[in-house]
Length: 580
Ligand code: PEP
Ligand code: MG
Image (cartoon, rainbow, N blue to C red; front, side):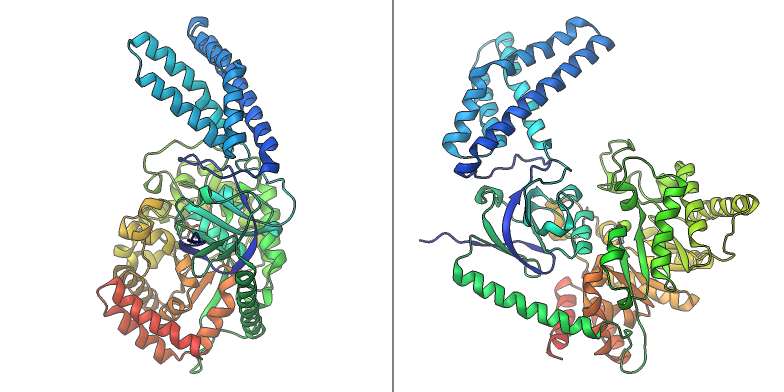
């Protein structure tokens, strides 16, 4: 019987791709396994040897450190570990496994560790056992070195590839230049994780939730990827390739037709407008994007600009970055979100504590309010860059009114000191907050008295409302933006903003679904902000729907008490949009 070659996973970022796969050795909890072709065996053995050298060097460093901080005697254990790695017998053993079984070095080393551990379990006596444990330990260092080799570095292979990894992380999505990245597949990952956000921002098809995939891949083998349906075909035959290419050209035609109409505003036939803005993660986005299509930048994720650098950007560097964005977008607005690090968004040069529960930890505005100098430098740069432009400031992860007051005080101080130093600064710079923490829902009217606008960060709001970590693949099935509670929270925010007469947007990724965008329009939201890829579809949907229909959709959706019920209502809307 032929092996099933189409595998089904979770759709993360839409689009169709075909090309050679490249498995990245990204850091992951599980040891990734893949097959190595005959021609790649020598390179795999070289990789093993490099990892042995790197692990030995690391052991040497640890030996010196322990000798310095403790005693030579305690440091001796690392010398023993290094000697174990110098034993040519064990290295030859692992080499032979790679050659005969044609598997990657990680798996071959892991097999050796397991063999050593089995031997250990069968031994009598504590001292023999601990010696045996020492035999396996240095190989764990080699395994760690292997799994970090290439982590975060660019893939050096030539040509365009579909990147495959054990876990979807920001490093995986950025493991190769964007021009060469055809798509991303991963055994595990969250649909609304930051890595997923990046894949959508890049307009790169991505599928996750494919357990055991890496074991079925070989470096360089052809696969197809359907990021909308969440499917991957392994080694497609000629017939599958031509059917796939046909679908790809039909999709390209539809997108082209939509793009041609996308410059017109998103106005319903009965005259209601929805602003459609874009989320920007990198200055590079500005160069490749057709600005005529958007109403502005609804979310500038400044932390990604920090991540692209080897150290904190200075005030002048930040000034230049922000200035480039406002100049390029003028006269459209740019909503600059202050630094939002924490969780899986880390700065390599900024040591943050290792937390048990990072989603509930030291992140977003909490960091800025504790390290106020960071915030001050960012605000100075932003206010200088935005002078004379439509710049708005937005605060991430706000959980109380006090935090708004504290940030306002810092903002006023920064503004006053800039004026004192002779800088020109705009008189009224709107300051808004992201609605991401559920506590805000219950003091929304008071908050609205003290901010100029709201933008709902549904990626985080859903995780906190449903208590489902957006980055944890074990619970990704429970992460459900179409939950009735999420819809009710959105309606509550939209209502409050309308009553207060303040602009209100959604910049979380659920707004990239045209049916959701219509729902938000019906709820009174004034805009949505999405990755550029989704903009033409959303504008099309708004032009094909009256505000009366959008409000009726809200009534019907809010009457549902189950995820299934909400899905049925929204699917009927999606079907209607496909048929017009
Ligand atoms: C969100 O949480 O929805 C959001 C837009 O912010 P981020 O995805 O950067 O956390
Ligand atoms: Mg967020």
